[in-house]
Length: 184
Image 1 (tube, rainbow, N blue to C red):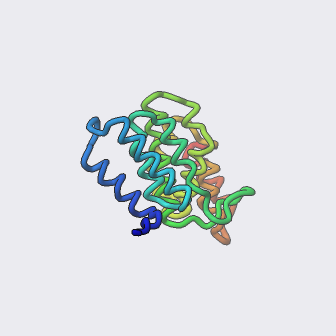
Image 2: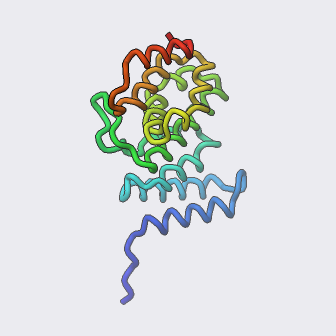
C-alpha cells in the first residue's frame, strides 16, 4: 500500500499561487477562490505565522470582499512581546503582513469613505508594527494619507510606538515633532 504524503503547507501555498496566476482577475471563479481560501486557512492552522497564507488570503478576497480580506489577514499572530502597551520585537515577516493589512484598510477606507475603518485599532496596530521594523520613513506614505484625513491622535500613538524602544530620546523631542507636524 502506498502511504499518503504528509500534509504540506508549502504545497498548499504553491497550489494557490498557481491557481491565482493561471486565473488572473475575473477569470478566477468563486469556487476556485473558495477552495484556495480554504487551503490558506488550513495552512494558517498548521503554521499561524505563514506570511504567504496571510498575504495570499488577502489577495484572493480583497476585490470581492475587502472587509473579509482585512478580517482574515488580521488573524496573523502578533509579534513576540506584543501587548500591555508594548509592541514587541516584530520581524520582517510581521512588517510585511502588517503593511499589507494597513494598505488594504487604508485603500478600502479611502475608496469607500468609511471613516470608521480609518479609525480602527487594527490600522494603528499594523502601522505601529510595520514602523518598528521599517522606521517612520518606511510608513510615511500611509502616514501622509492619515495626516490628510486628520487622524492626528492615532499618528501620535503610532509615532510613540515606533520609537518606544529607543533609549535616551527626550520626551520634549516628541512634543516638538508633533507641533511641527501640526498634530498638537
